[in-house]
Amino acid sequence: MLKRLTPPPAPLILSIADMERETGLGKDTLRVWERRYGFPNPSRDAHGERRYDEAQLQRLRLIKRLLDAGQRPHQVVPLPEAELQARLQERLQAQHAGQPPSPHPALEPVLCQQWLSALQANQTETLRLRLHEQLLRHGLGQTIEDFIVPLSVAVGQAWLDERISVFQEHLHSEIVQSVLRQALVQLDQQGHSGTPPRVLLTTLPNEHHALGLLMAECFLALQHCQRFALGPTTPVLEVLAAAQQLQIDAVALSFSSPHPPNEVLTALRQLRAQLPSTVALWVGGNAPVLRSPRLPAGVTALRRACELEAVVAQWRAEHSAA
Image (tube, rainbow, N blue to C red; front, side, top):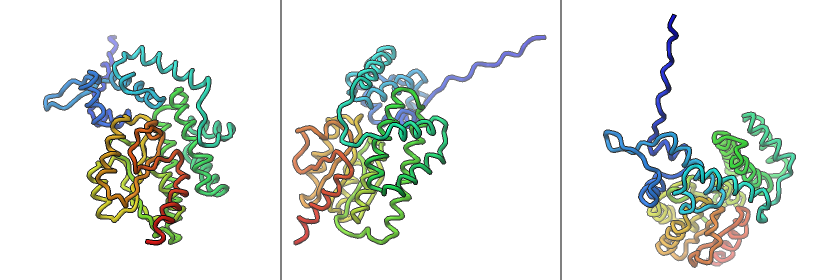
């Protein structure tokens, strides 16, 4: 009797939108790298649309991990996969040997391991309960600074070490964001969210990390500010239009480490030049360029979301006589 052969699975073919979703790298970034570095190198379908294979996806995931670990695009995008793997191992060993001091308190190892263990086991309800317990015990601001921020660093490191998968890192982010949004609703229901300044919150194109933005909004809510959250990836011209039409007092932007420094500086110069001088421009996140002397004048950079308390107090003091 002849044994029926199972046909091999069809090769994985992805669109540029698929690649953006799977890697966290923006479409524009992928197109720029294609022109500048010759990678990725997609084929084209009958309609001229880009199509990527699984090998390019895996290589881009390695590149993303190295960007998250502090490498620059020109250092890693042209490298073959074997060299990317070797460089990632070098980075991991260097990070384990000694990290620079963080502006945030260290998380208790037991709490960190409990969270990672629950995340590895996909125990989403356990994670939600633990986060709610932290909020009830310590309040919103302290929970963000002393628990969520260092925990997110630990989760990111666990992803770099391949102790958790991409989807588990996404689970962590979604759980944290959903709980913080619930906390924001509860704050707003208390009826104290109409006090100036009026703050616009967003990220610029190719910046998909929204957690930092949400944490910043929480601290603004604790200061009873009026907030207008646009979510991530808003074009500069739309930020300017929103600031004008919503009569915004301050624009707050978040930048993560993979964002190209020159893109950040160009966007900030454009915004600062075109925003009225009366509109403050506050920026935060872990992009190294935010600590650079090249930052345009008139831009306030924050290392921690909790610094918004002092920034808002200063704004109110300066405008109290107005």
